[in-house]
Amino acid sequence: RTAYDPAQFPMAMTPNDPGFDDLSGIKDGPRMNATFVTLARNSDVWEIAKSIRQVEDRFNRRYNYDWVFLNDKPFDDTFKTVTTSLVSGKTHYGLIPEEHWSFPDWIDQDKAAKVRQDMKEKGIIYGDSISYRHMCRFESGFFFRQELMMNYDYYWRVEPSVELYCDIHYDPFRYMHENNKKYSFTISLYEYHETIPTLWDSVKKFMKNHPEHIAAGNSLGFLSDDGGETYNRCHFWSNFEIGNLNWLRSKAYIDFFDSLDRDGGFFYERWGDAPVHSIAAGLMLPKEEIHFFNDIAYWHVPFTHCPTGEKLRTALKCHCNPRENFDWKGYSCTSRFFDINNMEKPEGWDTEGN
Ligand code: GDP
Ligand code: MN
Image (cartoon, rainbow, N blue to C red; front, side):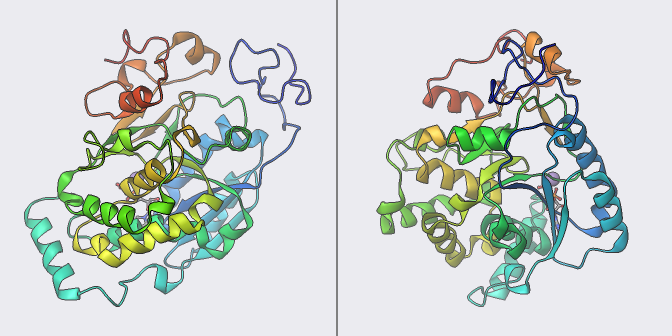
């Protein structure tokens, strides 16, 4: 194989590129100001250990990016020892301030409790959970401004119990930077209506109050089938994300989060960070700034993104079954993303994984 020469081949991304990374040794070349970030409980240690091992084997052992761990309780020694031993970069452990993981004072506790009871009776997933709501609000509005995160420009979110199925032959952080991407995804799908009945009303209120934050050439067509009147519930699945932290820290995003937070739907409903991030990216970024990582094969229960093209899959030594690929199935929104961006679907999309 041709050795990787970063000067000659700044970003060899496909098996046909000369200089396609041979995956040996630590990579030369520039690093972005970037980190992995994981929100976890101490009890998640063995599941996050598996995720880290995969991220390291498939990518980070050659790049050695840092990893920030965040928790609403102090991390214990086992968690720190195990994760530090697995991460090839530096590890940092942050305790989330209470005001980022609690009910804001404008929330009516009785109303919120009643909603949890109703959702429990209806069998809505996590419907009766308080901690899940704090988690969703934290991931929507606060992870990117934790003290430890302020040192970085890009993040890659990793959850416990996920899988990476293919080698990553280039630096996705650098790809984001060089191609001016602000947000990215591997899987998209429809949100449960019951968890977000009034989310779009809040979004419309925000759009009316802050027209200055709505981007020209945005991805509204991914989110709505009627020009913004209603939400079609499409969202990027945020348990995987590579994104630009400065965008999340921008006035536009903070105004968006604050407006939604005031409306109370993190507690009066069960708004997830996935639709919140997705709607923000869809409305406030030009559509070219959102990226679909076809070559990052990923699983989080119960969905898989596995590249369908056999050439790509074998070159990247993928171990996923393309028949399990979710992208082109009925409950995925990824073909909408391809449509609004006039993108051609990857090799094998219609013959495998349907
Ligand atoms: P799901 O993917 O929507 O089913 O939710 P998860 O249970 O995977 O939670 C999402 C992320 O938040 C994971 O990284 C969890 O480890 C983390 N998480 C969830 N609840 C808590 C919590 O109460 N405390 C902390 N520190 N992390 C949490
Ligand atoms: Mn999860």
